[in-house]
Length: 289
Image 1 (spheres, one colour):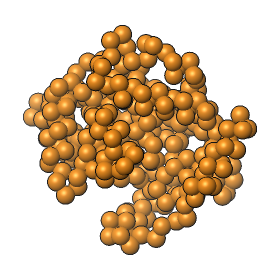
Image 2 (spheres, helix red, strand yellow):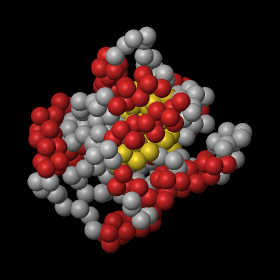
Image 3 (spheres, helix red, strand yellow):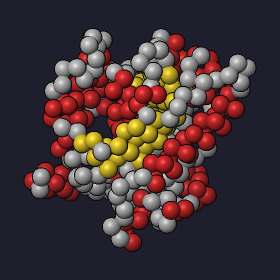
């Protein structure tokens, strides 16, 4: 297990010998994230980083279980001195605080009513040698299993002529995920696994690549779940475990119904931790260090 430390935050070689000056905002945000990871003592198990190419384009396709998956997934590419340009909802780029950072880090906005534009931007980034991060499930999985994948990631890989790096993240949903209150807790274990590159074969169709990607993602997620070091503290804490592992998370079928209501705007929102309560919890966590 790897626990972030202030030594990582101040490392001069963290981003390689000659990082691109245009990525200063991105590098600043990564260092801030490392400070947060250090403050909360997150325990990371990052494996397979050697599968991320040191040069050239690649698509990282990962499952999606928490709001902060992109921060954890980025750690998998950092040892190769690669920065991942994530595709994210356009609404995030319009946020008064997050928007300027998202644009400065050259992430890619996705407008679901005009997805072709984001697709073209992502393909150009891949052709320019960038690593693009995609959550092909399109939204957080409430069942904590791999949902059906959208074909965009496979189509991008074919059009740009780059490999897909399948990935799985696990554990971060215990802090912040859809339908549950944010819980700022210390010492949470977060697993990040990156699999062997999936290289499109000559003439292979996107749907075939998509099936191979999903199989790989499911295998990586199963490995992450099987090797996860923490267990539920009791019956009330089994919500973060999928149903097939004895948890109380919705089944894939139930999760699908929740997604339908979410899209229609008929979902019933669960209670959220208020900002003062979150701040009080945060201060309490830091005092107990």
